[in-house]
Amino acid sequence: MKRIIAVLIMGLFLAPALASATEDFLGAPIVPGAKIVKKTDSRLELLVKMSHDQVLAYYKNALKGLKDVRYREWKAVSYIEDDSNRPWHSITISKRSGAETSIVIMKDNWTWIMGTLLLRFIGVFIVLLVLFLALSVSGAIISRIVKPEGDQKAKAS
Amino acid sequence: MTFNEIMDLLGGVMQTTGVFNFDPKVIIMWALAAFFIYLAIAKKYEPLLLLPIGFGIFIVNFPLVPMMGYEEGRPQLLQFFYHYGLEWEIIPCVIFLGLGAMTDFGPLIANPKTLLIGAGAQLGVFVTFTGTVLAGFTLKEAASVGIIGGADGPTTVYLTTLLAPQLLGANALAAYSYMAMVPIIQPPIMRLMTTKKERLIRMRQLRPVSRREKILFPMVTAGIIALLVPSVIPLMGMFMLGNLMKESGVVSRLTETAQGSLMNIVTIFLGVSVGATMYADNFLSWKPLLIFGLGLLDFAVCTAGGILTVKIMNLFLKEKINPLIGSAGVSAVPMAARVSQMEGMREDKTNFLLMHAMGPNLAGVIGSAAAAGMFIAMFK
View 1 (cartoon, rainbow over the protein chains, first blue to last red):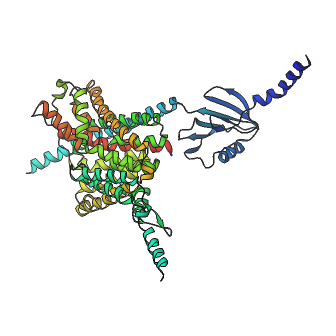
View 2 (cartoon, rainbow over the protein chains, first blue to last red; view 1 turned 90 degrees about the horizontal axis):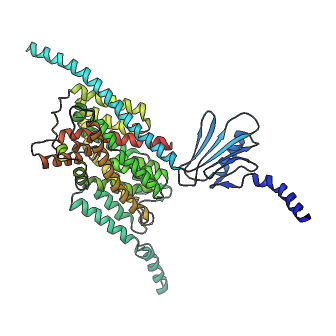
View 3 (tube, rainbow over the protein chains, first blue to last red; view 1 turned 60 degrees about the horizontal axis):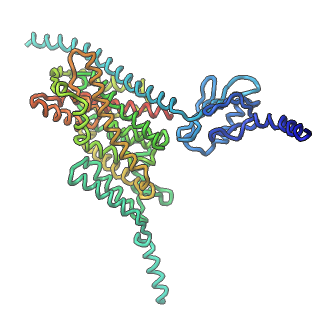
């Protein structure tokens, strides 16, 4: 009985440590002391008692020297993206005001790859469609100008 | 001098030769170089590129040759061409200047809906990207391999140098080799994907295109590309400048230089620099073989994509387009257009599709540049 109670007490002390993040998720480093908010096989959401700038500085240091890692600054978040074939795809760091910062680490997934490819393929069509419309309009305008000039020249001769 | 001193001296001299620093792996590279030189000379497959590329491969795969390194901080000969020509992205842009000065966009201007065929023919680029990622390449490498299907050498070199310079040799070789093999790769796909009735479609003669339209075209195109895909304007801007020079008719000296001697000069530097990146140590791996396989898939899917685009367009058009010109969206100019012509004449000797096919052929150049711009935007 005493042993059971001792194990339970140890478990109570260990539980917060276990609920805290392990060192990395899919190879992406995790800020020490970050608390897990939600975790699935492909997504890890964390909350850490640091400012956005401190978290960003941590990641820049942790990912220093790694090739094909890109940093983007958007209005609401800082976005770190892996362009090579590491298991993690992105790390999103919120820019909310306050003492806590939210971090989301996403697994490399085919949804993003296929989605961006499809958008870009459509983008090629859009570029050429715009050019098609421009040429059609300019062709119609110029052929109307050129035709009267041709008629005038024919009349003059 | 004693005998031992003489022997030491001789030994020292021998050590500076390649014989004592020989690596057997280079024999494979020599064989590869010989193969591409054979293709260029005997088979006349893209000789302007394959000959200097082949020689570049040959000459750098000797031990101790001072060609692709640095000496006292200064680049050696081929390193100099590579660094200032390719790494600085100058050569592909100057080649496009020359190409623009050679190109007549009349067939495209006369039938601008063929621009959509040029877009559809980029399908293989994106499909191959997916396949390349599945094969274990990084995203940037996949983009540089995917663009091979655009069948545009300078665009391939431009994008690969930017995103994955370590694959430059393999990508350029694959692109130029398959461009030369378009008459072998495309016809079976064209016959498979079209019915006899479709192959017999006759198209109305193209309207005449005025000089004003031809002058306006490069300005309009450069403006639209600059607004929508600014990352690729170094290539397309030079392309359109060359074309404007040609169509203006007032700078014939410049046009002649751009399409003649300037083009020839940079072609030599391009070929030999690309070949010089192919050392045995970095080329002999599974990646180049896979690139050659994926490149072939790329060309095939791009051909299919162009034909499919025409078939979809025909669902909405009163005046049908012969789907055989869809394969010309693969921008191996003018080879792919000639293949469309030949396949059309197999069914009907009086059906002349060449000028109709030139429209998508030229549209493919713009389409592949747009695709390259999309990839650059993805990673920058």
